[in-house]
Image (cartoon, rainbow, N blue to C red; front, side, top):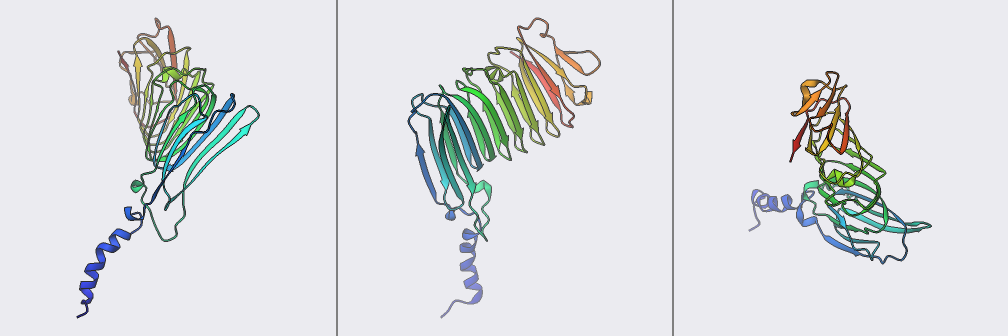
Length: 290
């Protein structure tokens, strides 16, 4: 006897739930592995764009241009890996974009894309990161970074410098989206200036590390809160003329009454960092740590 209409509906319901847009049964993963030989010294320009997935960057081997492991869902994403020889080095692009699939919606949280990239520590490097949804960790310590540009979306991003860079960082700029942003070991980057712009996400900055020179940090964080951890041996000046004092938490800082605050260790510090705060509605806190 044929199944009654309500019975057929009951049997079909689980199947429809599984095949709705973005479910795991529609994900089919593929891996790309590359480690091209280093055939010439010089400068390398690296641009990484990942709309969704986990990104992990680190110091790689000195005998290859880069070391890449890319795992992606071929049903929903299209990868592009290219390198071009330049007169003074090479240009590398790693791009993972969403593949249009009419009638199917794939929730970002379902994706298990992974980009693991090791960068050559001996090459002078210009690095650009465009990072979307996901958890991202870039440990850039030990690299010969010349320029660093980072833009983030809804993901959680950590930029870490676990060891000093091997050359001066001439340019360092971050444009952060609604996801959280954390900077660790900023002293090991020892950039002359850092520009950070953010919307509603929280920003955490750890100023530990071996500062080779005085630094300047410009913060334009409109809605999110900002937390700075300041080693006691480092002198910090906060210029917050445009901010409401009620939104500032600065224990162990002195004030000139006109929006300029200095840590109690400022006068005796061998290295000093100035933070310039633009207008914003969030809380700004700086605390001294051992």
